Image (cartoon, rainbow, N blue to C red; front, top):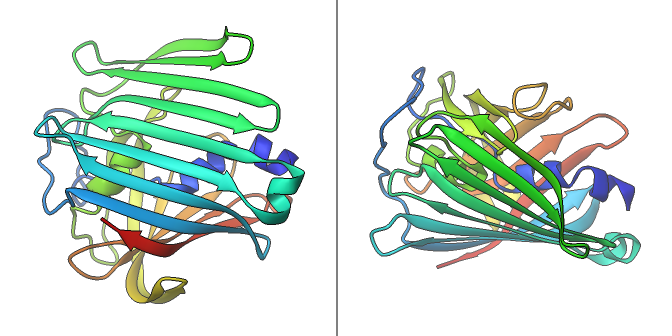
Length: 260
C-alpha cells in the first residue's frame, strides 16, 4: 500500500511521540540530565487507526540496562485489510545512557518487497551522528551520511521518556536538541490543555501536547503531532496523533494494553 510505504517514517514518528522538552523554556545543549521516576521496565501496546480502520499494531518496550542506561524496542505491524494490501513489519531499537542521551539506534524494515536496515551512531565527543541505510537483500549501501549534533541529543524513543520526567503545565513549553540521524534541530514542544481521552485501555485524564518536528524542523513534509499524557505522576502516553496532508489523513495511536 503506497501510503504506508511512502510514509512509514510518519507512522514510526507517531508511535513514539516525537516530543523532546528538557525544562520549560530552556534548551539542554550539553551534559547529562538525570531522569526521575522512569520505569525500570515497561510494555505498551497500541492500536493504530487510519481513516477509521485499524491499520496496525505497535508495541513499545523499555528496560533499564544494569546501570549502563536504557534499552528500547518499538515493533510496528500492519493488520487486517491494510496488511493484505501491503504488509508492514518494522522494528526500531535504541541504546541510551543514564541521562537518556542517544548512543545508537537500529531500524529494520520489511515492507512488501523492501527490506532495509538503518543504523545511526551518535558520537557525543565528536558531536557527530553517522547514518547508514542498507538494502538487506542486495547487501548494498543506499545512503551514508554524517551530520553535526549537540553533545547530548535525543533519539525518537528516548525523547518520549525524557518528556515523561517533566511537569509542564498547559501554557508552558520547551525545546531540546533532537536528531533522526539525517537532520538535527532544536525541537519545540507545548503543553496545550487538559482533556479526557478514551482508549481501548480505558478512560484517562490527560494533558495534550503538540510537538513541532514537521514543516522543515526535522521532517520536511507538512504535518502536526499531538501527544496525550496522563495527568498524574506516571505521565503515561495513552494517545498519539499525526495529522498529515489531506490525501494522507490522520493517523491515531491509542493505548490498548500495558504491562511490565
